[in-house]
Length: 619
Image 1 (cartoon, rainbow, N blue to C red):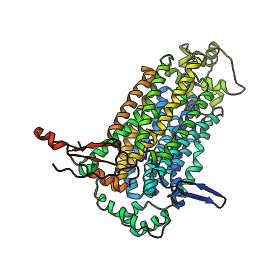
Image 2 (image 1 turned 120 degrees about the horizontal axis):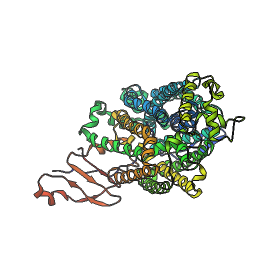
Image 3 (image 1 turned 90 degrees about the horizontal axis):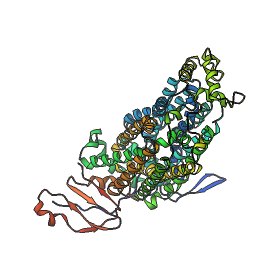
C-alpha cells in the first residue's frame, strides 16, 4: 500500500474549558504601549490591539479561577450557617459543576452559531446574575441555584474564550496568548484564596467573597461589546470583507489578504462538518477525538479539582486546625499555582507543550506518593471534619460569646434551648435555623460533641503537617506547568475550525462530567479508604497520563492551525506513524498479509520535524 509523505512541521498546543479548567497562547509579543506614560515590553510580533483583545477575553479565566477556588473557604462558613453534612457539602460543590456540564453540552453549538464574542458577553452577564442571587439569601436551595448559574457561565466562557483568543492570535504567538487565559485562571484562584483568608473571621464573609466578582464580570461584558468578532467566525458566516478589516486591525497592517486567503482555504470544506463527524474516520476525526477525550480524562482523574474545591478541608484534616490557618495555607496553594504557570506561559512556544506535560505528570506522581506515605501516619475521619464547623463552633468563635467551655457544658447549653430562635447568630432565618436546632438536638441527645470531633493540630506531628503541605504545593506546581495549561492548548489545535467549537464543547462536557463525579464523591470516598489511598490512586493516574503523553500527544509548536488540521487529516485508516524526538524512525504500515510484512512495512526512514509523536489511525 502506498505511503504518503508526511511533512516536516507540526507544532503547538492549546487549552479551552470548562473546566475547568481552559488556556490560550500568543507568541509574538511586541512592545505594547498601554498609555503615554506606561510602556510594557512584550514579546515581539503581537500587536497592541491583539494583546489587549486577548487580555480582555482572558478576564473570563480570572472569573473562572476565582469561582473555582472560592468555594474552598466559603464552604467553611456556609457549613456552619447551614449545618451541612459531608454529602450536602459535596452537593454544593458539585452544583457549579452540574451547571458547567449542562453548558458544555450546548456551548459549542452556541459559539459556532452566534459567535465567540457574543458567547463571552452572555457568560459574563450570567455570572453577575448568579452572584447577585447568592447575596440576599441564606438558603441551601437558593445557594445551589446560584452556583448552577455560575457554573453555566464559566463553562460557556471557557469554551468561547479559548477559541476566540486562538483565532485572533498570530500563528507564531498563539501559544503565549492562549496560555494567558490559564495564567488568569490561576491568578483568579489565588485571589479566591486570599479572599477566603481575608473574610474568614468576618460574619457572613462568604457574601463579600461572592460579591467581589460582580463589578469585574460587568466590566468584561461591556468591554467585549467593543472588541471585534473572530475573523475565522466572520469567514464562516461568509462575511469576508468584515474579516479582512478585523485582520488588518489585529495585525496592524494595511493588507491582510494573504492571511485571509489561508483562513478561507482552511474553512472551505470545514463548514460541511456535522457533529457526528467527530466520531467518524473522515479526516481522522475519530482518532483526534479519542486523544482529546483521554487527555481531559487525565486532567480530572489526577485529582487536581478536589484540591481546589476541598483545599481548606484537606488542610484542616492534616493539622491546620482553624479556619484562618487552613485558609492561609490554601493561599500558599494559589501562590504556587501562579508562580508555576508563569514559566509555562512564557516558554511554551520555545520548549513545547509536550515537554511540559511530561515534566508535570512525572513530578505529580512523585509528590502524590510522598503525600500518600505521609498521610499513612495521620488518621482522618472526614465526616467529623465536615461537622467540625457546627453552629455551636460558629457561635462560640464570634467575639463576645462563650469560650473555653467543655463538651458537657455545651451539651447542657444547647440541649436546654427551647427553640432555635435563641441561636443569636442566625435568628432571622427560621427555616434553616429550625433545621440546625433539630440537628443539634439529635447530635447532643446522643451524647456527641461536635467541637472535639476533628483532628486537633496537636495530634499531628509538626514534621508530618508541614511535609504534607510541601508535597501538596509541589503537586499543585507540577499540575500548573503540565496538565493544567497544556492540555487545553493541545485541544484547541487538533480540531479543524469549522467544528472546533463543537469538539471543544464535547471535550469540555467530559471534563466537567468527570469533575462532577469525583467532586461529588471525594469526601465520601476519602472517608471510606483514607486520604493516603486516594493519593496513591492519583499517583497511578499520573503515571498513566505520562505514558499517554509520551505515546500519543504531538508536539506542534510553530505550526498554524491550518497546517495542524491538514496534517492530521492526512493520516490514513491503516497507518500508524511513530515519531520520536529528533530521531530517524521508520514508517510502519499495517497489512493483513503477514508474508509481506518484512518488505512491506519498513519502507525507509525520514527525518521528521515533528517531535515525540505517535498518532493512531481511527479505530
